[in-house]
Length: 304
Image (cartoon, rainbow, N blue to C red):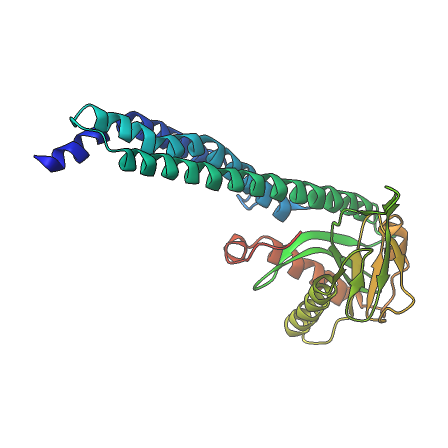
């Protein structure tokens, strides 16, 4: 029967399929999330969202690197199996097997390049998040300096990088990691010009970082007013680690800084005095918000 000539060679693919199943099983074991031993809630450190995305990126790299050779060789292995069950070979059929394998090799090669570039971007973003988080931790002092810092605060549709509660206002701190550009002489270009609606880097411009910071400030202000029953002063800072900032044409609502002296700048941050009951209630609300695992599952991944 002719159909057996196409069915029986599948036997040679079973070992490859079994190895592929082992690879998928090993991938499912990779879970770097850490939960508190006290209440089983996820523990959130600076850059936790980026840590999660980086773990996922490494998992995808492992999957593409392991399954790529297996899937790419499958057409050739199937064709070799066909040789045992047919009396006459057709060069067109072998050409199709070869073209299919070549196409799969190209696809998985592009996927690996994509994974590599994604991991580089995420590692740069995580490094900047950790640097900003380290600066923010300097604000945490005893009663004489009642500051509180929250990392990766979830909203209804995105994540706020950092929220700092001070006696003189609430500050949203967003971090964006951007590699410095190279000039014609090979030197680094690290001047960024801040305008009302965009950031002008040496070779490109961006609007989203400022928009995202304003979006976070707006959401937090509305949410706190709804929860507290009165307006709460909320401001925003955008941190670009490693860049020299020119604020000459910038708007007044968002402060863009390099982050070198973030702790001292936040210590001088002033929007208006907050009463002690509202100050304590804001801290309680943010603590509860940060501990909601069901909210985290609905979030879209933030950009680096």
